[in-house]
Length: 262
Image (cartoon, rainbow, N blue to C red; front, side, top):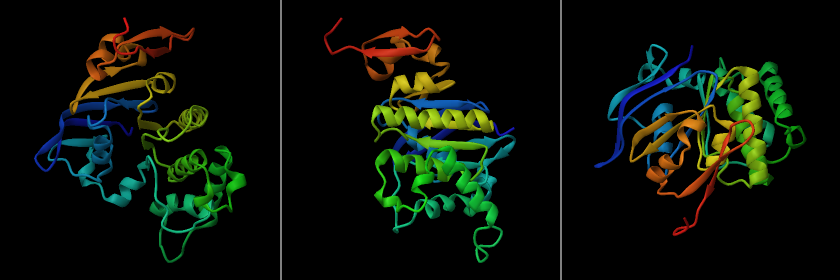
């Protein structure tokens, strides 16, 4: 099992403490959403898990192993990452860009990618409906198309865990729904674990099995969408007045109220 356990995690930028004793256990084979207001530490938490940032105290464990003791290459075979956006440093084709996800599996960089690597790339491009962009320059894609390419690059790493940092923030509602649907379908098909930072409460309710809500660098609550997306929690975390309704499948959806509206 690739269970992620975080215990008493602290992180600071200089003298400014961002994470203030985070305790979370992420369950396997489900999508966990990380929610909270701007500046509460959502993206910083992901970067600590990835090792891009070094925590000042506390620990992050993968199973029984401390992530600090795992090499970056080994970690890249276990955890993949979809950033909010990515800067292309060259005019690469979609196929070549997605192939970068196979780098952690190369036995020898001098030998380059194998036939098997290319077959994996083509499979995921097909699953994400990106085949028609195979030879297109990635720089020419729309925001929604490129976000799917970023997801494909992460999936070809064939990791057990995938982290996503606000993957829908630059997308319109239709593309956001499409991306999250493809993510959910792939997670269920491959028995993967996903941790995704989101701002859209209703997207989180629709696609996340569990939600962790942060406030001021601490875990405020953790549970199912029904348990966490309550009027009381949203008022305390976001200072948001709202109504909560439920679909026939008991999925909550949030209707915000204007300030001053009862």
